[in-house]
Image (cartoon, rainbow, N blue to C red; front, side, top):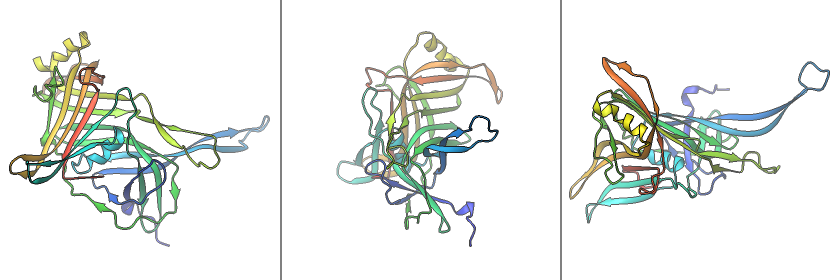
Length: 333
């Protein structure tokens, strides 16, 4: 009997039309890794007068997937469609000719329901494989510096189904990576001015969302896991480590006045089309933020620096707290 090699544990993804029923996995992601694992809660029973447990009784069973990787312009739509909500997709033309690029816009409704995408995630090889349905990205952090850009997070899913046969021939999208040299950071006073004031001495930073969803459990013997996920009160945050110059110390005044600022993390990458218009791969992660966590001064490669923490806040003029835009050659999930 062949061994189950760790190296050959492929991960494949299928987009579910409705959350829960498993679907065929048609996509292989090259830059973002999912690794579904078994999670469970037990009630332990120990009769009075007995030293050892009598039983460990299974209650809830579900799966959790660690997410690790790097941002890839062509695959980011799969991430944000689950983390935030189903996107608005607009093909880009130069007035007449299709450019091959599409703009994906993801927003979260501050006071209403979102419509996130869920996935079926398969993992394994021809030796043995398993899958989880109703997988939804519950948290994600993008960390960036001039050295590297990383994605880390977690996804929630229904209980693993073991011993499956992998879907045949999932396809991989072109791997167009968001490199450290593509990134810039902006902090502006209005949403309309987003992308105007570049922070020129950002040494590193991160931006992320957590606690997006929770499982709904019901008493129903026909349901081996939770029945669906529901939105919970999310946490949106960012951190910027900056040289403690005039620009890097401006958040001190903003902190004292509880001032809302508008943060943009932008990456502009490989060209898609040059004609009547120029279209490049692009990521824009925008958020209305307020300072919530100052740090101590520190030495960073000889530069006196300060890290500021920010929380996402709803801005009534902008009408939201966060928005993500991706321009890429991917045209549909």
